[in-house]
Amino acid sequence: MSEIDEIVAQFASAVWGVPLVILLIGGGIYLLILSRFLPFRYLGHALEVLRGKYNNPNDPGEINHFQSLSTALSSTVGMGNIAGVAVAIAIGGPGAIFWLWVSAVVGMATKFFTNSLSVMYRGRDTQGNIQGGVMYYITEGLGKKWKFMAIFFSIAGLIGALPVFNVNQLTQAINFILLEPNNVPTGFTTNFIIGIILVIITSVVILGGLSRIGYTVSKLVPAMVALYFLSVLIILFVNYDQVPYYLSLIFTDAFAADSYKGDPLLGGVLGGLILLGIRRGAFSNEAGIGTATMAHGASKTSEPIREGLVAMMGPAIDTLVVCTLTALTILVTGVWQSTDVNGVSLTAAAFDASIPYVGSYLLLLCIAAFSISSLFSFSYYGTKCLSFLIGAERKHYYNYFYIISIMVGATTSLSMMINLIDGFFALMAIPTMISTLILAPRVMKEAKVYFKKYK
Figure (cartoon, rainbow, N blue to C red):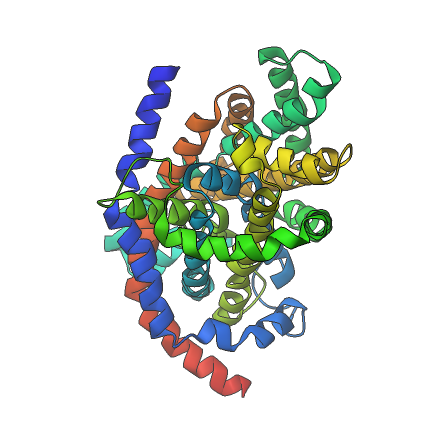
């Protein structure tokens, strides 16, 4: 297993090199400039769309704007925000959070373009149903000669959509917070039992299709974000005197990089820190990866720009709000310097330090909601990828592969799981960003028409 772990780590490091960083961040900055910061200028209108002001039941699609954003957020507001941020701080210190923010601001522009395209160029599956996503806007927008990129994205998506990291961290949280403090022996057996329980819960929802997934997560996501938000505010209030210091340290440490413990990349320690923040940011908000396009592409709308505006709010909620709250919780409590645990266990230590007795249990409740909701969304992404590759009538086979992967995630190491998903996310980003950059001028042409009508 250690040899496999090392191979997976080398694979993730290889694909997350300089070219991909340039493609994701450089491409995102280009889109931000091309749009003239449009995503930020129409935040108010985006909120109106999200509230349902422009909903039309006769529009094509399966779910409304709010459900599509909830489905996308349920896969992004998850363990990336809790465990992923903890991993970033453990390796890169407070400065890693600054680069996480940079990836989110740039990611808002990327999400606007990718998800506008997911509605602009919807295709049909082999059963004649309207579908959206990167693979469809490549074939419909760029033509059949580009289909190889759509196939590449879909193959990478089969692995990238697996829930192994979320399951792994939920299992670790249950062991660390619930079982070990109550003297319950933990190991392969308890992990296996947790995996079985997650399989049962997931099967009930995912076998019901997108409508059941969309309905479930639209109820679960707001509640879980609210609970997490409240818990973190209590911790920040208890440690209020430390908040200004650590907010300033995030900025100063972003360039000093004294606490970076990873491998020097991009020619130096600072380069390694930047890459770490961008990598964890991409893992958290998935901007430029392309997964969310499959949820937003199913939105009930005939206006692509509206869906782009709704989608761009994802990185703001996910990274600028939730990840920042997690980061401050870990920093102000000091656990990032006083303990050697990593991942979700580090966040749990922060909660326990500020809210004794109940803090870690509150976090466990949030983690369970985050993880389980993401299990629902990722299964939908995987079935969409398989449907594109071998036909909609066979897409249900992915669910069996998906359910087996839950057991793998529950019984395998953290480093292997995070590197595996990191690596395949990177592969998905290549066709997503290349096709988006080529098609971006068409989005701007559509946006000019849309905002002229809106005004």
